[in-house]
Image 1 (cartoon, one colour):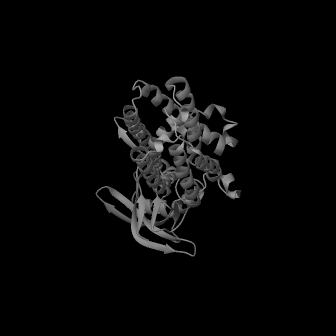
Image 2 (cartoon, helix red, strand yellow; image 1 turned 90 degrees about the vertical axis):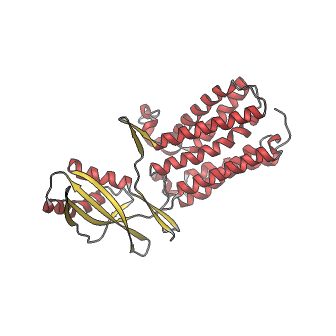
Image 3 (tube, one colour; image 1 turned 120 degrees about the horizontal axis):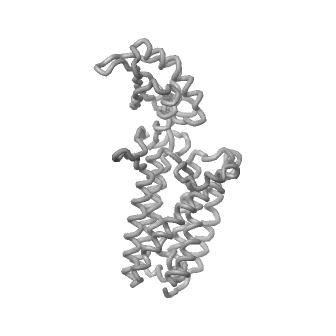
Length: 354
């Protein structure tokens, strides 16, 4: 093991009473950089710069709508078929990259034919370069949100996500809890299946003395963690742990050991892979003649991004319960036709003019 990353980070930035979520910020950064990238392409190939505004609108709309519908129909239709009114409530969470990929392709076909008067593959060969860049930032947004993380495992670099655990504990104690912090003790609780990092959790309650603080932690913490085990799979009770109670200028507080569940940091794996793919596609466009071969760069994007997506799914936690009975999960099944299409485009690509 090289390092255990204790990911104890808020998912938003408070700004004048408004919460800017890092996931939203990563989306904004990706679209801004993507716009600059396509402006460079337009200038390099003497394309009318006035087309940029409409391209941005179609890309943003296709990405959000497609990703949302992808989640609804590919992953959670069992719920949304009975809650149709919630389908467009993007702020409640639930986006799928495969849905975004399909929607972007359809939107670029329409935009190319009706607005830009370009061959759709010309557009796709160029737009996917910045889409790969955006994919890396979006996965970093998942990292900040402590979501779409890896399966439990001891790896060279492992992550313990504590934000969801904190939220579930705070819900369990209700309005009585004032603060809860976690620190890595550098110790391990060794079992046959996993070596769990031991975390020190420090509790402060509102208006409780030392005896009451000790009672609250010892009597309720294990119950709370066990009761929320479905929602919180990242913090577990330490066997037979007892709280130690202290006092300082801020009053009584309790310290008790808990177990952090180590996971593969798959969001970082994906972000790094997508940025590498962006670098490779940019080099292909700038330094070779393959940009003149219809569909080659688009095909390379599909093979690289969704080929890696197929591979990394083996290291992820399943997202929905029905995947437990599948030989391949939903992300892998959806990736296969896209990878095959990518190989086909690369092998059949021919010279074309814009």
